[in-house]
Length: 64
Image (cartoon, rainbow, N blue to C red; front, side, top):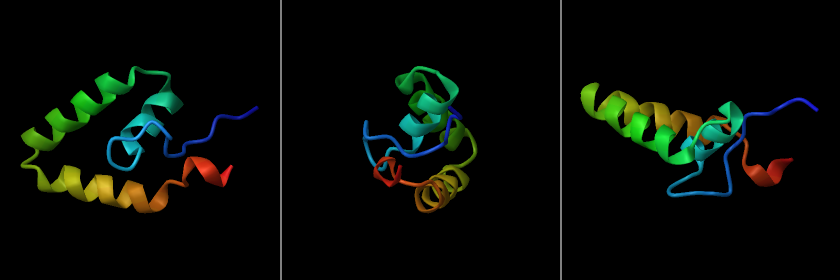
């Protein structure tokens, strides 16, 4: 069975970071912390824009 990148049901906002963590097999908290740190060090806006795009592009966990 192939792995598929999708938003997770383990949501804080939209399930994007949790979905990426599940796809990669990483800890969800670690992915969230890495995302926040990258967003802060990139002046915040690019991280927010990437999150919004992923929210719209990644299918919901219910779509499978």
